[in-house]
Image (cartoon, rainbow, N blue to C red; front, side, top):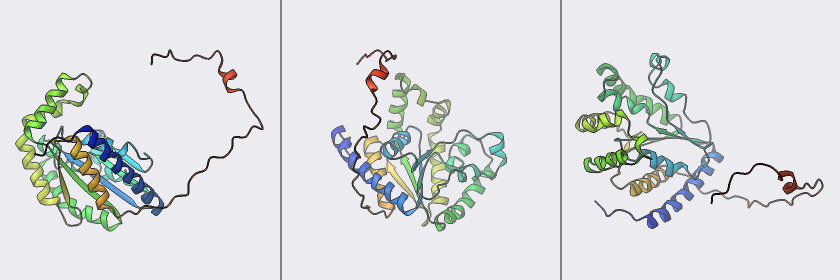
Length: 261
C-alpha cells in the first residue's frame, strides 16, 4: 500500500476537487441534470467521511444526502425499492445515498433480515431497474469502499477508546466484524449480478481514508461530463441610508453569551 497521504497535501488536493464539485453543481443546476451517487462498503470503510468531503462545500439543495432509517412496518409492506425511489433527484439535483437499495445485498442478506428468495429476487431484478434509471437520463454512479481486515480492526478499536467516536460503533457493526467472510461472499455475489455496463461498480481502496476521499471525488467528476459555466461577477449594491437605523443602540442591554474565546 502507498504511504499514508500527509494532511497538507490532502487538504490542498481536496480544495481543488471541492472547487470542481462547485462547478459540477452549477452545471447540474443550470442544465437541469440529475445524478445519483451510491456509496457502499464495509463497516469502518469511511463512507461518512467521504460523503462529508463531497458535500461540505456545496449546496444541500443541489447535493442531497439521503440516509434512510430502518424500514417501518409500512415500508416493509411496499415494493422494496419504493422508499428509495421517493428520494430520487428532480432536475438540478444530485442525490447521495448513504446506504442504498444495496442494503438487501449486504446487511439484510448476511444478518437474515430478508429471505433467500427476496435476496435472489433483488439480484435478478436490480440490473433491469438500474437500466431504466440510466435510460431516463439519470447519471448513476456506484462506488464501493473496500477496507482491509487489519485497518478495519484498527478503526473499530479506535472507536471503542474515543468518546467522540463511540456512537459510530453500533451493535450491527460489532456483529459485522465477526462475519467478515460472510460479507465478502455477499459482496462478490452482488458484484457478479449487478456490475453491468450501464451501471458498473467502481472500487476504492479505503485503507487510507484521505486517499479514498480524493479518489472518490475525482472519480465522480470524471464520470459526469460537466462543463465550467461562465458567471457574471456579483456587485454589491450601496446600502440605503434613507431609513438609517442605530443597530448598536438597539442591541444595548440584550443578553450576549459569555465570551470564552
